[in-house]
Length: 302
Image (cartoon, rainbow, N blue to C red; front, top):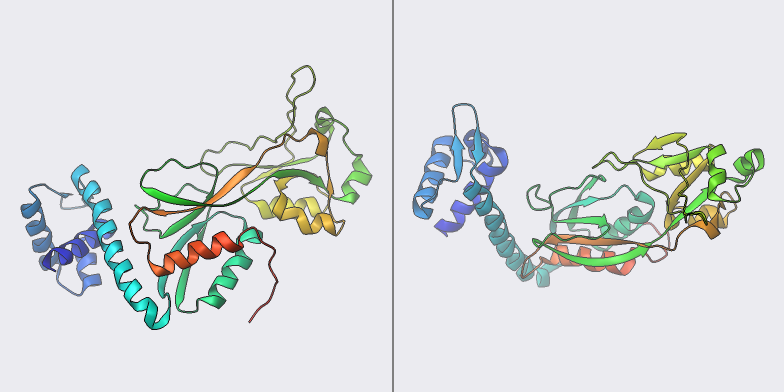
């Protein structure tokens, strides 16, 4: 158990970069924390931190040991949670990073809260590429393909993108017949937060191979803004199909150039640190997302 205590102290120092702050969180003195880290370094035969009078930073060996230490403690927590599971179901805090697609995930997470009241959700909505392990997330939901060998993944489903505009906008500006016609229209675009690049619309090239380059009338880094502007007649937007399904059914939006959009799908997955035993609370979330994410929601509340 002394070794496990060393893991806990080391992780606390690595996350806070301070013996004082780590000691305060653990209820011991900064001196006790420093001695515990020194004993751990002596036993391992490596230096885990670079220390100066102004800062504490991880060495390369420390960074490697941090990832392993988190995994060890996660396994222990998972074992404890499995034992508690039979007594009262999954419980505890879950820190989850999610993309800015609230219309897709919020109803699903609200239902998860209703079904698992003992689980505390700590949700971080962002389209930036977070480091699941280094930033201490239990899980992340992300689009596209992933090749991080430190993570396990489960595919939740897939979606495609559509070009849409309001009936009012099309009545005022006309309906484009080809991608080239977009040059005379207001186009609402998305910028990737991680790279700053503008999303390329999935348009088929012209017969001569020319690629259309829709002009930029507005650009933003979230889905809700483009959807709102499109609904209010401000232009044509390229949006995920799940985000415009209701508006299309209600006649608030109309498809634009449907025959000129390339067939394509984008995958959505949940990822979590690889481990032998996902905790009951994490397993509950993974199973819930897998079963509900792309299924119609009943809108019930309680």
